[in-house]
Image 1 (cartoon, rainbow, N blue to C red):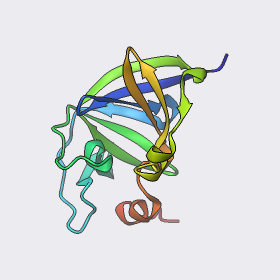
Image 2 (image 1 turned 90 degrees about the horizontal axis):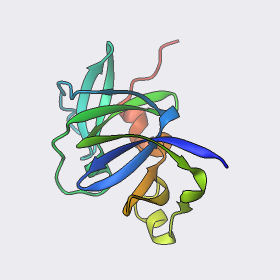
Image 3 (image 1 turned 180 degrees about the vertical axis):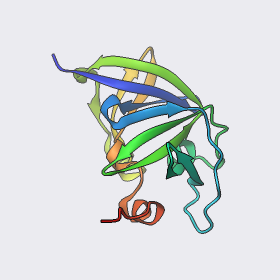
Length: 150
């Protein structure tokens, strides 16, 4: 049976999973410089490992009205680029059977489906698997991250 290694994070008492192969680092929150004109879910830009990275508030990205007070930033690959996700808590790494995940109900796909991939139950809690490559809509990602120089 196929298994999936995920990093479980918590935001507003909700549990989310990121595929471990999409996570490059977990760190304490860094100093964030605001980005005027950025979408509401973008806290600004932080320098991680010498590189400027957009900081995305996961709660705001998924529809919260107020930003979270993050305990951790999680560096996530979004295609060829990286963003730092501001999360309240890093729960830990879990190895789950791929069979526990179910397709999203149609209502979820219509709402914030660009970021959500599947759902499961973990210790009687709803666990939402996030699609790292689709966390930030492409039209926003292109504006938030500088083009690689050739």
